[in-house]
Length: 164
Image (cartoon, rainbow, N blue to C red):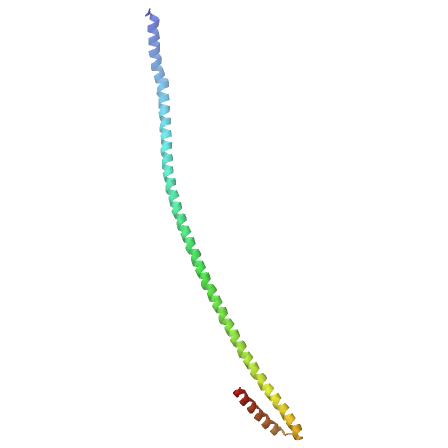
């Protein structure tokens, strides 16, 4: 049956003694190490949560900033297009005005040239008519007669031109 000998008592004393020694030497430091490790892990988790929240806030701020930047860029582009249209219209209007001035000057020059040609034609026609008249009359007209006939011819041509 059970033998409660001295060996059993010594074994029990050894186990108790070993328990206290291991508790003092091994269990407390290991427990302390585990607790420190658990606190470090918890601290890291808390820091990670805090960093994540800050990152979320920064992300929201960045998105807002991007939206504002996009809105500003759209506004700048819109203003640039408006300015470009205005400048283009101004340049086109300036071109039209310059073209109208050139056309007006050209028409005036054409009218002046036409008037000069008509006057020259009238003088040449009068000279030819006087030469033909002189042949018909068989005499040479004097310089004064030439001027008088030329003036008379010019007046008649001007009168005909006014009637046409």
